[in-house]
Length: 402
Ligand SMILES: NC(=O)c1ccc[n+]([C@@H]2O[C@H](COP(=O)([O-])OP(=O)(O)OC[C@H]3O[C@@H](n4cnc5c(N)ncnc54)[C@H](OP(=O)(O)O)[C@@H]3O)[C@@H](O)[C@H]2O)c1
Image (cartoon, rainbow, N blue to C red; front, side, top):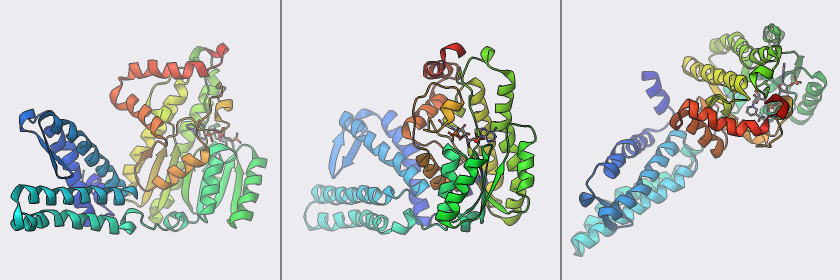
């Protein structure tokens, strides 16, 4: 509990934490009480100095609730939009307090009282607007934060290749690994030429039981500061029609190999007091998915593993993040024998991951994927979610595999 509290409040100035606590109180305690329990006849809301009462006040309380809820997120994640947005809201309150007091008290006394009531909120508005650096802190480069070398699995295509490009852009040297060595070599040449980083390629099959251990041996001489556990595969179809051996290899690739690599490489990170581990999970990890049942289960494993390691390792200087994309435009769907159905560009999901590294334990790129995964996890019961997910997956499964 203490660690959690420290996690929530660390790194922000005291005034921002105070606003965070206030907005949290308003969003989770006061506004629900105000909207759902306070008698209608006693309700009052003020917007821009205009007083709303009764049912009008109930309706006008909803945008207030939204504002405080968004502010909790904005202060917690220090989103750049919070600066102007929070300042605008505080300015509106300052204006409202001033007008309200002038009108209700009247005369010179009302004017002075209005200033006394409005100025503190005006100062908050001004303070927020001026705090540009606090909302977009200039972070050290990834190499400075975590170390010179990164290991990216599944770097021969899709999301892994984009991770490698994004890390090289930040000056991080790279171990690139997958089965198709010629592709790894081509990417290594590109990164060396374009970003002057060092590279090493290791061709290995991570679906074989000792693949991850052999890879860890091959980088024993390097201080790996960032581990991107990204290699993975799916396999669409009904379980009685799927090949058992291919399912087993998928579980080794998606679950066992990331675990072995994390287990082998995090001791060095903990010893150095810095490091990062990224798991490419999937939004699929939030729900049972008929016709992708084993894949979804492997991604649930990655999610639970990563989120637990986040808590274990944070205090030791190691950041863990589970990236959970929805559909992405890569070779994944072909490799999984799915009927092609498009998706987000891989650069975008990598951008979201690196932006969130050092922040929350997991991130789902794209609001629609976020909404779908959260429906599955928080609102829908698991059996209901499984039926909904079947509706999504069945049309994407080849006829002969249904
Ligand atoms: N694309 C999506 O819609 C999507 C959505 C959510 C999550 N994800 C996850 O994102 C990760 C990356 O997938 P992607 O979309 O980039 O797919 P991709 O384009 O098919 O790339 C998969 C990568 O994993 C490597 N790989 C596959 N089997 C391997 C094995 N046995 N041993 C070593 N490496 C292996 C592949 O290289 P080689 O073939 O050269 O070995 C390739 O570099 C996976 O974990 C996937 O589950 C993808």
